[in-house]
Length: 183
Image (cartoon, rainbow, N blue to C red):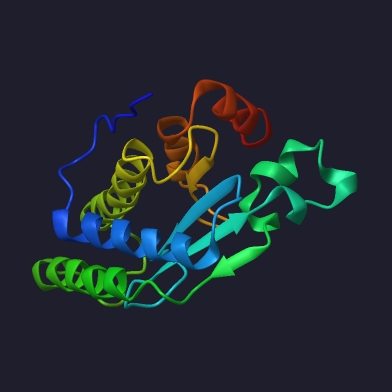
């Protein structure tokens, strides 16, 4: 099955390539056998610059036996076991470049803490580059058809988690996710 990213602004090719390369290296380090892989993009509402990238992975054996039938624990990234904050160096450099380019053109009152339309569009574009990277990795066989993929922003009401889960997964896996985390 080939997945497609729809209704997305054009992405930054260097950033997408960097994310793909770093994710491939991450998977080479941790090995196979995981059922779920999540990218945690920089959350500009709670984290100071420069932007970073992290990943979270879960294997069947990471789910407590008493919770194995509960899809909340299967798809709830906050409950997953292997959090990786290191090893995404190329992505970090490209994210910093991407952010600095935006910041150089964005004029805003430093005392205004509300996101303006340009910041919202930047965040959406940033998240979409992460989705595009995972789509490429899914389509090139880096991830198996049954591997759950998602862009996850902890404690956020941003639609990226649901949007990415729908775009990145087959309908059966997405349906199980959506039953727990809404559509």
